[in-house]
Amino acid sequence: MDPESVRTGERVPHGGESDREILDFSANTNPSAPDGVTAVYERALEESRRYPDDDYPAFRTAAAEFVGCDPARVIPTPGGLAAIRLAMEIALEPGDDALVPYPSFGEYAREVQLQGASPRFVPHDEILTVEGDVLEECALAVVCTPNNPTGEAADPDELAAFAARCEGTGTTLLIDEAFLGFTDLPSAAGFGLEHVIVARSLTKLFGLPGLRAGFAVATGRRRESLETARRAWSLGTPAARVGAHCLDQDTFVRDTRERVASERDRMRDALEERFDVDPSDAPYLLCDVGDRDVDAVIASARESGVAIRDARTFRGLESHVRVAVKDRDANDRLLAALGVLESDCCEHTSGEFHE
Image (cartoon, rainbow, N blue to C red; front, side):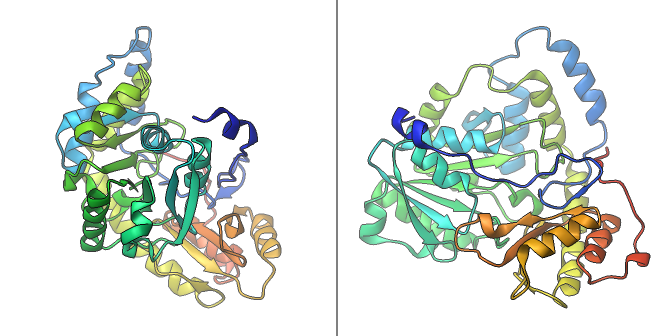
């Protein structure tokens, strides 16, 4: 990390509501967690009186089975963002350029800048077409699939072709799959290319954002560099044990995917009565409020006890909000708060996460 860049850097705004009385649609996390999480956590907490096994064999095995790779290729990290930073630390040097999509996750540009490198912004729906001199001039390229906040997943064939071009130019390709678990699409971990690093987050799909568990997947020299650079005991015992447990819950994952797909379609149909809504493969919807005042839309929803994300914090968006996809009762509260569903049709439920 470049010291001068750290001194001049800034924090990036995110979703997430600290008021437990407010139903939080600003963060895209599952409203429920798999059965058995509490018991696994309690046992792991007792075992936390000793350092964890720094090899994390059970976690690596579960993660590898989940994305379809060899366990040796899995690098445990405390969350998906830690995997992103680790990848950039080994791929970038001061003065390098990195291809960064927009609008997309704001941490990409920040992390590039913290390494003393410069983000070269490309529209998110054009980044897979980049080739030639532009690609050769960049040490790193970032792809987010499904993209946040727009929600569309990359076409697997187009992504594979782009990965092959990155391999040809020696450009490290970082693929952020934080929300890919909500889809049936295969992980890019299956590419097996040395220039590809995949970053995964467990906390979105399994509804445990405070646990901080994730991993990177790589091969060859990049895997060796990630393994050397990762911090010792990079996962606490509770995160490693709960993470391994969650990754093995096939029925929970399947049920979550089905619920999100069904509710997302229903919500989009309702929201389109007032807003322009982007198609999405993710557990969130990006809404263009048009001529309406974004601050007023957000404030009105909050008065009804619902927090939504101000999407103007994403590069290139000026009239947008983003809403998560939760369970049916919570989604109805959101729709009522945004004026597209009668409020007396909604069963008011708590915004608390449950197991």
